[in-house]
Amino acid sequence: MYLYINSKLEISHYKFHSEKVRRDVRLAVLADLHNCMCEDGGRQLFNVIDGEKPDVIVFAGDMIDASFCDPAVMQAMKLMHEHYPLIYGIGNHERKLVEDRQSARVRKIFRKGLQDAGLRLLSDSYKYLSDSGIKISCLDLPVFYFRRFDQPQLDVRQIREKLGDIDNKYFNVLIAHDPQYFEAYSDYGSELVLSGHMHGGVVRIPFLGGLVSPKLKLFPDYTAGLFERKETKMIVSKGLGMHTIKVRVNNPTELVIVDIMGNRNGK
Image (cartoon, rainbow, N blue to C red; front, side, top):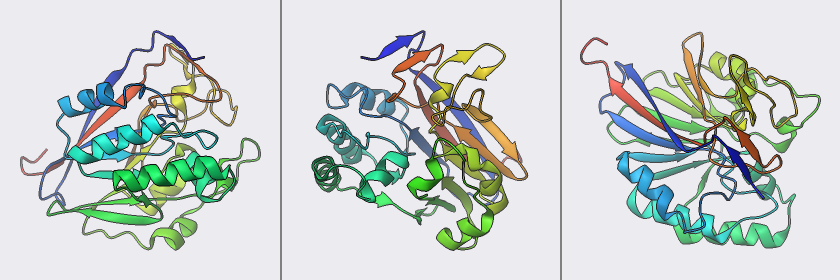
């Protein structure tokens, strides 16, 4: 059973300008779907995305649950990929499946769904968006980094070992599911980080923000919205679903639309 209170789907828009960008690109960013909103095979969700006319759809992780992969979600992914280029970044639930920590049955459904949709997970790898000057990389952290207690440290050297040095010729977008490591992401030097994982803090309290993180930390630092450190900006999506704590209060599900634009007008 899922409980939504004052949590109607919202669409959030962000714009970024850079001299490195040669062709404007619109990204539709989905995070933390967790098998939700796909009872109709994702048609209603797709219609909302299609109305925004993105150039690329980005999954920022946890589109399924490690313990259950709904075939309807895989059908939704296929529908989206039939109409738009799609980049699938890895969250902790996908990582659990890849690490064989969950049942073979769930893993089989997930892998078949990816194959049918013509999708591959972007794991510690990257894609260039053609003729745009934009590079999108995905950081794939082991499950160890998502522990609820005694959070491990992550520093920029570990990111470089996975992704290599930053290429400053491009506008660098980093898909990094867990925003709690923002300091390391900004030290790495990506201009933009796309994140989720926090489910908006489950319950949003006026003037205080999100109540609790998936690691059961009260009032965590990054639950939703735009954050800045050094030359890096990070967008944390509230996500589209829920799993362990099946409640959202004053915490709308969220589709994030990101426009990355050239600096041709001096903006």
